[in-house]
Image (cartoon, rainbow, N blue to C red):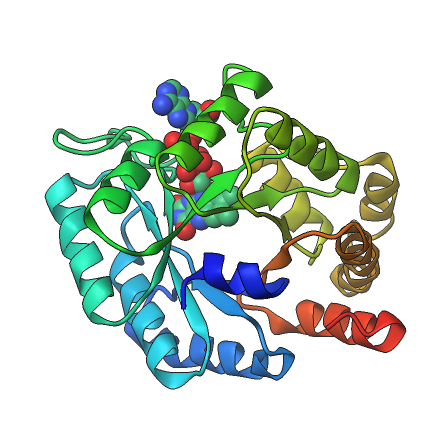
Length: 291
Ligand SMILES: Cc1cc2nc3c(=O)[nH]c(=O)nc-3n(C[C@H](O)[C@H](O)[C@H](O)COP(=O)(O)OP(=O)(O)OC[C@H]3O[C@@H](n4cnc5c(N)ncnc54)[C@H](O)[C@@H]3O)c2cc1C
């Protein structure tokens, strides 16, 4: 079922996983996916390694998850470094594996790679890939958006207008980059609606796993760490277990606030670690019967 059709019926809970570096790791990720099935996700997604090394395992994990579990699977696909011909080959394989949903992205090259971001006969931006998929295929189509603006963007206004272009080119729903202050998300949604973006906007939530990890991630994607969270990160600087427990509390409040505001769904960046997401969903079930 296409995700936009699921969203038309219900508010969604979704989980994002990444592919392993070796084929032998597929089984371990499938076990993680299985361990979260008890929360009845409306869909799960599998990231695509724009750098190259994990690309083929992305497809393998996507199709195996779809075949093994009674859950919709959204494939991530990045256009960086790919020719249109290569992208078409992937799209055709996904189609023949009964994958119905794709989130179409530009992707980033790892900082240690010197390859060019775009190749001859390739696409420059996610909006180009979205346009191509929309014209030639019948996938449900997602796109990324950035409540605090994309780090390379000329300005927030430029960025949100390019988000609008992705929707005009065929994106049926948007999923946000991680953020830690719900007000940033609410402001983004208001601005998006004001410029005519009408599709569902699903907030992406990454529970803190350690102080180091969250500093690294926010630095890479340009997300802000609010002062209350920063104080907690300092407190648990050398205590990953404490940081993880704090991260569960923080994300529980964050998700509760988002859910209460009427969001279309919540997309959890699971990072193949099911513990925190399980705890958060247990907390919410117990407190307010969220699901
Ligand atoms: C939900 C989600 C899932 C993700 N999954 C993956 C994944 O699986 N694999 C992966 O490698 N990365 C993934 N990413 C990261 C993403 O690839 C990076 O954030 C990347 O830098 C931008 O991707 P994009 O699709 O937003 O690109 P784009 O929409 O192309 O935007 C990139 C930059 O170009 C600007 N821009 C956009 N369109 C135009 C235009 N037409 N003309 C000029 N400038 C333009 C934008 O303002 C932005 O600064 C994901 C991000 C999110 C939020």
